[in-house]
Amino acid sequence: MEHQPSPPGDAGRYPTEMKTLAILLTILAIQCSTVLAESFRIATYNLNWNNRHGDQVLDAISTAKPDLICFQETTLQSERFLREKLSVDFPHFISAGHAGKYAAERFAFASKTPLSNPKFTPPDAGLFGFYSTTISVGGTAIHVVNVHLSPVVLQRGDRITAVMNELSRTEAKHEIEIAAITGAIDVRRPTIVVGDFNSISTFVAPKTLTQHGMIDSFASIHDDADTQPTWSWPTRPLPISLRIDYIFHTPHFVTSESAIIQREGSDHYLLVSELQRVAPDGG
Image (cartoon, rainbow, N blue to C red; front, side, top):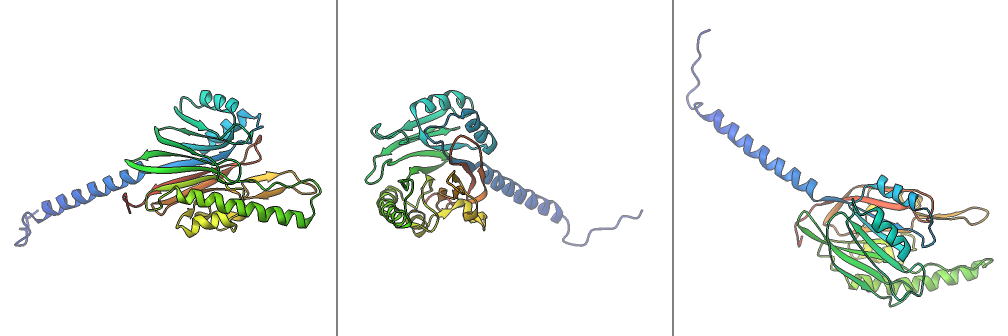
């Protein structure tokens, strides 16, 4: 076959283009690996202080595959159980409570990676306060706040007027509780607020976080979010089922996955989200 000379100016062009392509591919690979390194899974789980179904709790955690679990309504007994059973996969475990007055008052974190700056804040209103810590993901410090807002306390046989009055009283408590929480966070920094809000999405506590620019993780990828309950109670003639557990995050993250894991033992279900970091520190 007769050799065809290269057109003038072509000599050396293709090696240069190949080098450029190689550089671009390398940059892309680095970016992709950074995104993966900065994604993590966080779960919130109100265990119900009277829960005797430890196997169901462990199964829910195993199914969710979180990197960090935020528990509410732990007890000293359940914390010992969790610390022992989760020690291999979640070697970093911290817990706190208020004054030992309420069986449902305690909080815990279980993490695959180290936790720092734990702080328990006693309640200004309500019963439980909140518990916070810092976790590092891909070199980014993330402030995580674990909350358990006041429950609505109803009595057997309450009429509609009594129910509405109790809802109003609880909303007033929630307004004080969520003000304390928003006062303790800086939404300009990567922040996540999770837990049992004892509140539907249109009530004061979730609305306040939304007004502060935080994002309801589950609702951000599920159009029918409020039809998917995280809590159920066996009232008659029909059980009550509502979405009252949340994972809120600042715009430093985007939710790529969020799911509710239903198991027995607790009146709440485990809620898990996979979050990806989308902005640099301070962004």
